Image 1 (cartoon, helix red, strand yellow):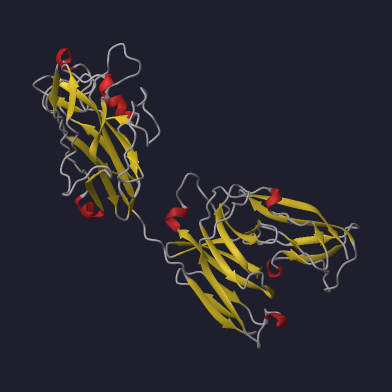
Image 2: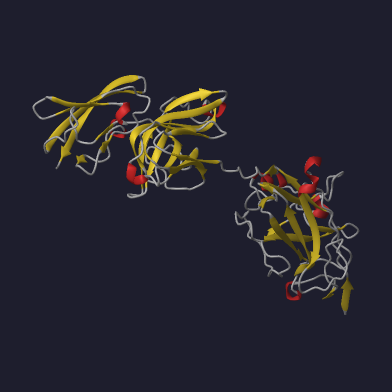
Length: 455
């Protein structure tokens, strides 16, 4: 003889989020694609089930999907988390003799019966997801089926692993992160459930919802210049000051050229000296690869001064630097820069002779090699550029192999040696020695090395 029963699951969503954010999300209960429902659903329901004897068995396919699913939409939010659970015994402690040790899911109080309830996330709406028993251990896969835990759950004696509510919550089994669109499917496990009506209230607690910061508008300024030079100034305080007679005539069009200083969101592999993969800020100075006759002054906004003085490591004026992107070799050149706090903002001041992409990175402690020129051969078409010397107030002395000083270069030369002597004549081919002093971590250090000159 067949016994018939209807199993009903009533769902109530308790949304624990600040009142100011009530318009920032929506929760809807929708019918699955394979279930016809004309009116909006109010409860999760399961189909009418018939079973032999007085209980559902494995042969009766005890894992039954609900007719509906939940659709959760977050508007303008990210990093939202949700905790899902039942609280079937909020005012009493259930007897373990009558109810056992686990209470999550749907309950039939007159019969002291329980039917487990399972849930699963999906990124696809309406699609029926095949059911199945979840693993015994909490899973890190946010798209696997999981049991709904109850706040009264206690550990099962002699069972493997701690099955209590506290342990499940600590392990993250009851909590999941949400994307902008998230869908939750439910499934009932009616194995050995007797005939009758089963119901519960499912609580969905939302928390740690953080408003998305609006995308910052990237600032860009342009100016048409001639040999008189000029200054481009951004609203954030960054500027590029080009002295007169700085342009080569072949770069001008009818005696003029348009210069642009702009913020950029370009991303590149970080330089080896960088402490973080992401730059603090990136700028573009165009036309790309334009070279100047004379050294221009550059000031770039980095961050609020308060940010500069906090963080995982205490940064000093050698903890944040400007890097120039060399697109020809797909690598960074360390330019340096001197920190210049002003009105609660931290700027880096430096000099330049070449336009291009510049990024500000927090840096690791610098070593001797960080100040040496990356290219060690000087020709009429290539120069030796000493790195990270902006703000060092040093002079680089160049000697021939006899010890005679042939040139002294500094910030006015952009710490670059083009192979010329004091009179501006290109030196003879051979090996030349350089020496200069720098401040590293509060100590003065003499750095020396050799350069090869080839005509």
